[in-house]
Every structure is written in structure tokens, then in C-alpha cells.
Image 1 (cartoon, rainbow, N blue to C red):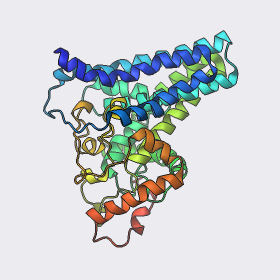
Image 2: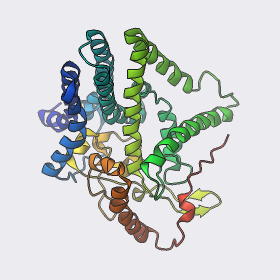
Image 3: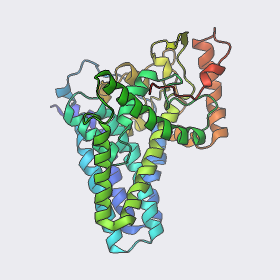
Image 4: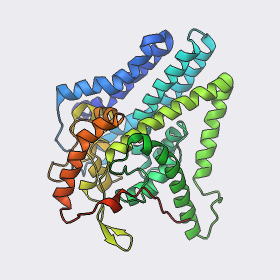
Length: 373
């Protein structure tokens, strides 16, 4: 392993810098709790402004053995996140130096960490072939009470993205505040029905032991029991608090990634194949370090099992580009008038460029989710 390859991977390790900030927040409380959201949302936005875009692509044929230092950060994050969440829970609930409101704020901030980093890393792990990595992805997801996201993402989202059958493709004109409660229920329902349908094709009932939902539920229950063992029902509440804000972060990103980008309906319930044009992309260097190239989203849908350092950048004429990285765009999504002002002209440009023949877009706004039962 050359020094050059190690140094190339190091920027993606910046996420570890959030751990000392979490410890400082737990020790001092008060204003220091704001360090976590300030670092993830604002610091990396500032770094994007300073560092600009990264338009370079690594060789997609690079072998796994040459990606060790890239892969390692996703593997070690699992114990790092669990130790941080439950270690700080034990510390703040037993030391008594933080007011209950500060404890709540701390775990809401930890949800930003486990959502922005933890769920994103689980997304990388769930797509890989080694069973160990997929298990680690499940652990990260169940540590935020969202284990079913793996089934939803792999069996529903990647198959139906850009169609009404994908819950997490945000509809044109749909605000995040409508999208969020809708997707919480529909993604749970669609993921369960997808697993049930897979088992039915093997002539097995939904409650068969091979249904991964049993694993999701068992791991989530284990984390809840651990929280109770540490700090009783207050510990369970704090754990649920960080889980909620982690999922909030995830769905904010989901909202941005495919907003109003729809695949052309070909008739008889069939849609065109997924293309780079069906994902919003951002080439901003620093936020792609933080999000391990998640913003190269078109290539992820083209090659879902491609490891993050090998994801390719697309040019403006190949895929739609966001004006800013995800940190800025997710903040904009929280203010619907700003979001519509920024995004709707871009959506219209996208429609005119790729689908000038479509005059009536009303059918593509349907928010139904007609998956087989």
C-alpha cells in the first residue's frame, strides 16, 4: 500500500473528527452541543466554497485490495458509533452534570452524526457482496431503528426509482413536510411487502425465519434493551431521540436526491430504464468527502455495488446538477418557498431537455404506492 494511496483516502476520514466534538458536547453541554450540527452543515459548506468541485474519476476497474484505506473507515465506524452513543449515554445520565434538556439536545445532535455518517456508511455496506459488510450495515441501520431501510432500498428504491411505486422519489411540488411522514409509513410498508413477495415466490410465508425483518426487529430490540439497562426509560427515550433525528437526516437527503425526476412511462405499467438523468448530482469536493461520494448519485444507480471511491462524476449534459452540495440543499429543503425557487426552474429545464414530447406531467405526480400484497 503506497503512501500516495493512503493520502488519497485520508480526506474521507474527516468524519472521525466529529467524535471529539460529540465528547466535548457531552462534557460541557450548553452551546458546545451546537458544534455537531455546525460542523456537518456549515463547516463543510464553507469548505465546499473554498475547495470547489472535484471532477476527477478514479479507474472504475481498481481492485478491492487497492481500496483498503477507503473501505476501512466504513468498517471501523460501526464500533465507533456504538461506543459514542452508548458511552455518552452512560456518562451524561450518571454524572448528572447536564440538565435533561441538554441531554435531549445532545442526543438530537448525535442523531445528526448517526444519520449523516452512520446511515450513509450503512448504505455503502449494504450494497457490498461480503456478508460481514452487509451485517455491519444492518447494525448501523438498526442502531437508528430503521433496519427495514435495507430491504426498501435494495428491493424497492433501486427497482422503482423515478416512478410512483418508489416512496422515496419526492414528487414535484411535494414539500419535505409532506414527504417525510408519507415516506416513513410507505417505505416500511413497501419494504415488508417486497420481502413478503420474495418469500411467496419460494412458497414460504412472510413469517419464515429467513425474513430479514426478524433480524431487524431483534437488533432494534437489543439496542432498546441496552439503553434501558444504561438509563431506564430515559435512556430508551434518548436512544429514540437520536434515531429520529438520524432518520430525519436520511430522508432529507432522499428528498433531495431524486426530487421531481421521473422515468418516462412506456405504457402497461412499464417505465424506461434508470439513466443518469434520474438523479441529482453534486461534485462539491468537501461534502463528497463527508458523504463518501454519495453526491455522485447517478453512477451509484448505474452500478449499485461500485465502492464509493470508484463512483464516477457525470457532466452537465449527462445528468442534472445541484447548485450546491447536499448540506446546503437539505437546509433549503426545510424552507419550501426557497426550495421551490431554487429547484423548480431546474426541474423545468430538465423536462425540456430530456422529455420535450411530454406535455402533461400530472400523472407523474401521483404519490401512490401500489406494491403487490
